[in-house]
Image (tube, rainbow, N blue to C red; front, side, top):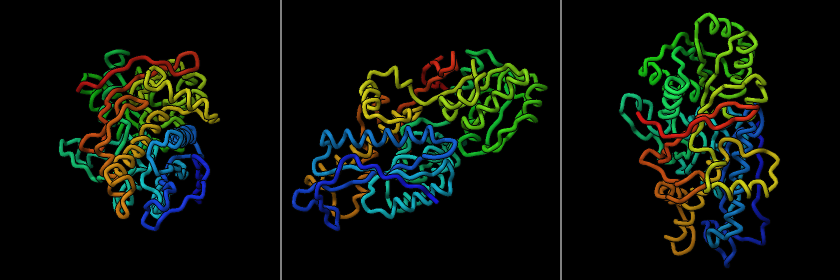
Length: 400
């Protein structure tokens, strides 16, 4: 069953609401922003950072009376990182008339299960973490035939169309690795990331000396470790997430294959290091610039700490805050354009259309969206494990 957690940014004070969503006697209208993420299970470290950051954005909006006459709340649902629960959560959020936007999900495969449901209801979703290219540009994007499948889908994270090639350029040009063993977990995110990495790496002159697919729930990689050792690879590239990547890297090192494992933002978590005490020298890319280095993020980091969340904001915290703020700004613009109140009907369509036009200085930099609903921020960062922590190795913008 799906666990649901509803976090209220502030207490209700006798608020009343008309059936059409308009103001009644000057009371604040409650607007709910849904959050879908893995709040339990292997990926919960990332999911809890997403939920908490969305909650923080809502709290700050309410404290500042960002939208006059509107009080925001979040409704956070647990997808456990799997498509079926995500699909059920999408149906639940659509069925709640107070929900005017959704932040999430974490996983591209989960997003695939939700997009049609949200789009049919004109309910906007803004993911802070999805990187699968087809979600915004269609299944034929790699052939140059880009077509946006869903007008309701947006993201503040850049895509694997740039993340995979950026990693390939780093591994070949900077790390001087020419022979890579390619492994992916067969999920939308992992397989897509591995595919875009492979294309750029071979284009640069690198050699893929072997390819294997694993199950994301696998934890015994002895057969693959043997293949990697016999392949002559000087690096492993893994398309997937940290619950499998950590044990895979550890088993490689334990077997004497002292070569770096590199992955995408799905492994750039403190939990990867916890799972792999021999991760020194492993690499990961992550979307955007490191939040800690941004002047625009200083207040967010301080506010997050002051709020007392017991979970770290993790890789997608800043992007989750910005995703939530994009919906809040869209609601603000809709209210402004409708004589100071939400439309009596079709508010969801109005908010969806307004998200397309938002632009603001967010935690992660300037937040705006292109014609596909993708972020206009194409910057990425390569991290490496040093002394038990992820350390910045290189930041930049992919140049094809």
